Length: 482
Image 1 (cartoon, rainbow, N blue to C red):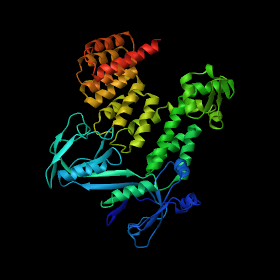
Image 2 (image 1 turned 120 degrees about the horizontal axis):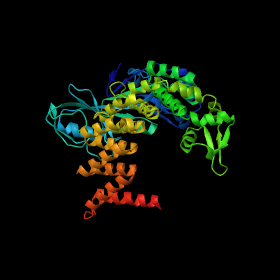
Image 3 (image 1 turned 90 degrees about the vertical axis):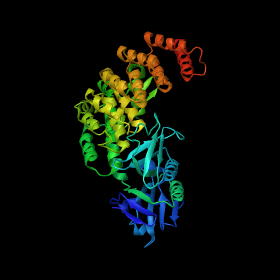
Image 4 (image 1 turned 120 degrees about the vertical axis):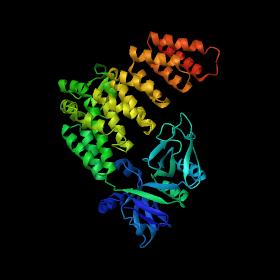
């Protein structure tokens, strides 16, 4: 339910554990408090320990003045303000340009509302990049022009579409963010997105992921599917991702289990798995002493659990779950789609290839997610080559860029030959750079010969970006051969 009160309203309200909240903020003092004179409420910043501990951020409502704007909007003690959302109605080209400039002020993305179309999130790779969209008209504002190769060209936008509004979502991390954001948006209609400070549940979900026990899988899956709370769903999927990451270390931990010890010579273990286990905090490596030592309690306990977890994960339930939730139409939260894609990259199910290609080709998806879909396909490897080649043939520039990187990561004769053909037939410098990098990753004799042919073509063009990059590639190859 939304309640508009003057320039402020609130949305996404949920139940709150007020008594728990006060236990959590008890003793923090008044150094990080702020009284908002306009809204007539006092807020407090979470200290760094709480933010790290509970995987959340924002400012907490301590109290509201009776009959003030915040009180009339039914903001309650204990609510966590995590987002400030501003809406910019577009009634002229000037409105559009001004709204776009303001929306990009704090970050590189905003949500565009077009008549009779679902909302589109437009994301720029870097600050200062052009969106590639111009509009015209007063009252009814229409898309006038779309510049090829820009985010607007890769979204579901057509010339003639009617622009209704731009929505700017700003994440709140601190009192400073709150004050600065509300100051900049003081004349705008603003919505607060609030959430429950559910640290105890989040801590329990994280612990389930750390334990590496097969008994954690079903509760985490149930919580992910049935909870309406984004924080819990996100942490549940992250914990499932960790369980998958743990499961692929089974061979490593079975060596400890077979020897019935918690320490082995480091050089007797597979280096990549050893590094992964160290990153996950399960063991420590001493290169001088040549030892790999399991850390208590999780590492020492996990050697007894790794085999059962590996077998459970490979039954396919999590691969199917992750595949279902990588589509933006099914799961709108990118922070959930990301671990789903990571799970597919680790498990490498051939059945997920078509779904991953769909994500990779989706122009309305954010660039980072599309790239991660390409990475997952690269991890699946040879079975994904044919589908990737088809996607390259029919794709736009951004699709070709991602596919080329994926094919370079896979390697093999088929991927290599298609990349070489594409490089020799391409005149677009942006994709040429990616193709050069992908071919260099493969690095076999035909790949090097193809890059040498390209270098010869650019002998007289010292200022070419492709020529400069080719020079760097060959210098790197020479260093590796020394």
